[in-house]
Length: 327
Image (cartoon, rainbow, N blue to C red; front, side, top):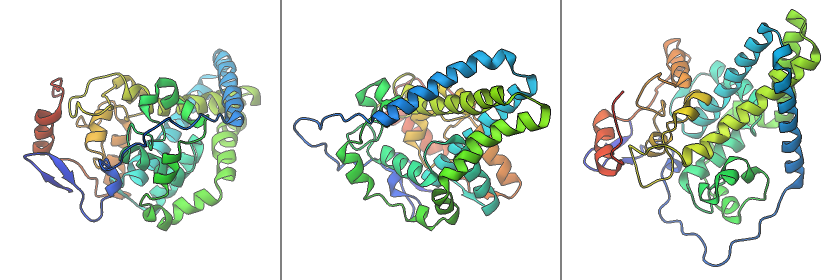
């Protein structure tokens, strides 16, 4: 367990914990006018095409078989775990340890999610925690809902994001052979996992048309996973209560927790980023925590880290907004 001062509930990382979990209070935004916004038109076009295709896929849902709809849900959960249990809780925050088979499983799931490779996702997320809601935060919520949701992917990064990102401690990512293998073959793995597998399985196994199989379990599912993840950056930083720390933007948002299989308890997560459950409520609206607990039970994961109840309660009293209720 990380060391915690119960009186002040300030987390002090142990040597094996990442200091990138701690907000950098020494960082100061540069004075003067902000750099001009430079639109990446290629990304604008690609995202427009993707969402147009996803809307078309939505129209095809009534014509899809029950098995295809179930398969779409399976792909949604599998790709979601690649982000939540994989890129986020395992590789970004190192909240638990995973065996080689589990890391390989999560790397395949992450490729199905197609949200940048694990290395880049974890690096950007560490920057988000260390410089949250500043110019060095890749999806700074102070720039509005659209920017923090999708706009940050449509424009050039703020110079501070690039500068601070290069100084982050990411040696653990570079030392992980699964992470670097996925990074090396990322494009191929995305073609296979994000598009081919979701489309091929329903066509081959139960005779779904390739047209429906492509637009529903592949394209529509992909767009839904993307937007659910983005809601953590946008909605969960704007709407909800702040029972653990009222001085930060992130909120408790149960709708986001549901759509992201557990990532919407965001005020808790930013207050205690080392906690593998990202919530005090166990499996409640948190399929990812159930998954990690199951992997620990099967011996495929170990050492899940969590905050003590005393430390959590002390933090609630010291910085919470008064809205905390157990259960």
